[in-house]
Length: 177
Image (cartoon, rainbow, N blue to C red; front, side, top):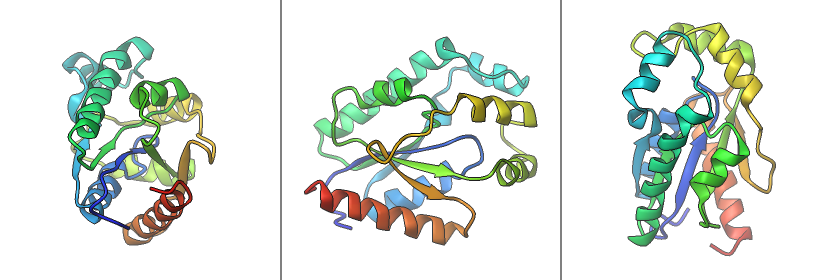
């Protein structure tokens, strides 16, 4: 993939799908910068999730707007930026996109069982619990091929990243970017 051409990519999916690890590696492969969307949740939202309470649209609104601003700034600077963000609903993705037709989504998808295993293995993260995972899976409006490339997370981290890179290359070539 051409690391010199600027790109904006959101690595999306439910908790524990690997957004941070995959996003960091994609950013490196593209010669860009990575931001973990979780770092920009309000203290109130983090406290809510720590109590096992799912976020609602109001909780997410300011957070999504802030991430959209980071993406717009990267576009204005012609900078490659990869953000890890759940982006569960189409309208959330539309908020992130805000007129940027070149923003690309990588949807990391996996079985409930695998995701639950990963959540239960986490020690230092505010998102915990089966009910929160079920809430995210129920909320997820999986993107179609026109909106995202989808990558199965069942393989190794290296396999997942390689598949994401190959699918992105194909998408960028098809779009002439």
